[in-house]
Structures are given as structure tokens and as C-alpha cells.
Length: 303
Ligand code: NAP
Image (cartoon, rainbow, N blue to C red; front, side, top):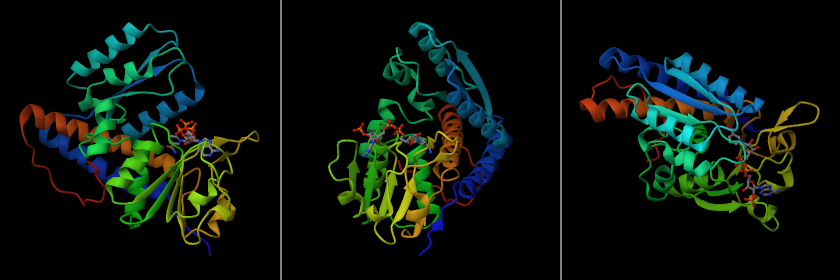
């Protein structure tokens, strides 16, 4: 068996094309251009690349973006003041603080300072809690991207066994909640899970987000499973790989995401979707409902 490749670049492009149409409609009908502000703290080279990618992606779909940079030792007050100014700025509809923050910063305080209505990364306590009760405004971009890959590939979720390897606040836990809302039976594994394979082998859909190259080997995967590799690891020889033995597992799985080119492009795509949605919500809050043409609906809004 050779797995079907779930290509995040292709799926992401289709969603971005539709987002571009939605942005055009919003601008034409209301004059409002969706705006994203990105805050970058410190000089982490990987963060700088991620931010540049996000800004380029915004430009591609017509979202206006701005980057605000601070040195790594910026005082907490300065940061919170900047976020509050952006919260009050009617031209800014989404605010993103690039993570990870330099170690001495209080990540929670920073993320919770962002207005819930502008929290396009979906990390504010309200949006995180909203995932539990189905009231979230913005879903976190990476697990939201995974759901969109599955939906685009018409892979059913209801009633399936889903195993998630990795239990972080930004990927594993929200992923589990989203899967539960779609009536999957979910197991969540982490570094202290004993005998990981006894959980992974049960999975109809296996989502791996641990940050450990080659963690998932073919013998840990059920024949015909759908395997979503969220991991991004840079090997000493410079290669970028996921957490899954792609070659081996491809021979056993029915569908698999590659690294690079799987979940990664979807994360940025969902940021664009969330920012467009934030701008639309802003217009509707301040001016009332807007009537825009309907474009084919294929994005799963999990709220
Ligand atoms: P994280 O905060 O370091 O969390 C890693 C999770 O994996 C933790 O829950 C950890 O368990 C668990 N884990 C670590 N080693 C394990 C093992 N041997 N067996 C089972 N579980 C293990 O990382 P993250 O931010 O969630 O990111 C995870 C990976 O996804 C990274 O490679 C990251 O680069 C990638 N990522 C990709 C995207 C994308 O767009 N494609 C977005 C975000 C992250 P404990 O909780 O017990 O420590």
C-alpha cells in the first residue's frame, strides 16, 4: 500500500484563493481592509522567518499587515501598552504575538492582554475555554489547519479513533477538543505515556505533534490509518523532517501529510482565514450585517 499524500500546499492554496475573494468583497462593499499586527520580540532567527512568511501570505490575499519589533528585554509594561493600543485601533482586526517569547516574559499575561475579538491565533483564555463548550471565536491555527486538511480530503471524523501524540497548549490539547467536538473517540499521549504504541496502533486518525524525529515507526501504525505529522524538526544535516518515519509509514497508512508541505502551510492559511473573519466581525459589530456574495463553503468553522 502506498499512502495518498495530503498536500497542505494545494489545500492551503484553495483556501487562500477563497479568502482573497472574501477580502476583495469586504473591501469593495465596506471599504474596510482587513489588518493584522504582528509583534516580534527578540532576535530568534526562526521566529523572524515565520513572521516574514505570515506577512508575505497576508500581502498575497490583500490583508494589510504591520510588524512591531521589540528587543528581547522590552519591559512588560511597554508590551502590554502596545497591545492595548492595537486593541483600540479600528484598522487592526487581528493581533499576533510571535511565540516563543524570550524566557523571562509572562506568556499568559501577554496573550491575555489581546482582545478576544482580535485573538486570531486563538490562544486567549476565552478562545481556549470556548473550545470546550463550543463557543470559540477563533480556533488555534495549527489544529484548525489539521481539521481543514481532513475535511478537504473528505476523511470522516465522527466515531473514529483519534490518537494525538503531544499535549501542548497550542497543538495537542486544542486538537483533542476539536476532535471531540466532531464526535471522535480521542486518546492524548505525551512524554510520560507508557507504551506509546498501544495507543497509536488503535488510531484510525493519528496526529503527531511531539517534536521528536522518527518517533512514529511503521509497526506503531494501523494499516490504512490516516497519519497527520505536525512535527517540524531540523536534523544536523540541515534536512527538515516531521515526527513520523515518512517512508516506512507511507507504505502502511492510507493517507499521510509530508513535512515540509503538510500542516505547516495550513497553519499560516488559517491565520489568514481568522484575520478575515475578525475583520468581518468588526464590521458587523460596528455597522450591522453585511451582505457579501457566497463563495463555496469548504472550511470547517468549529465554533
Ligand atoms: P511542545 O510544546 O514541546 O510539546 C510537545 C508535546 O509532545 C508535549 O506534550 C510532550 O509531552 C510531547 N512529547 C515529547 N516527547 C514525546 C515522546 N517521546 N512521546 C510522546 N510525547 C512526547 O511542542 P509543540 O509546540 O506542541 O510542537 C510540537 C511539534 O510540532 C514541534 O516539532 C513543532 O515544531 C511542531 N509545530 C508545527 C507547527 C506547524 O505549523 N506545522 C505548528 C506548531 C508546532 P509532555 O507534555 O509530557 O512534555
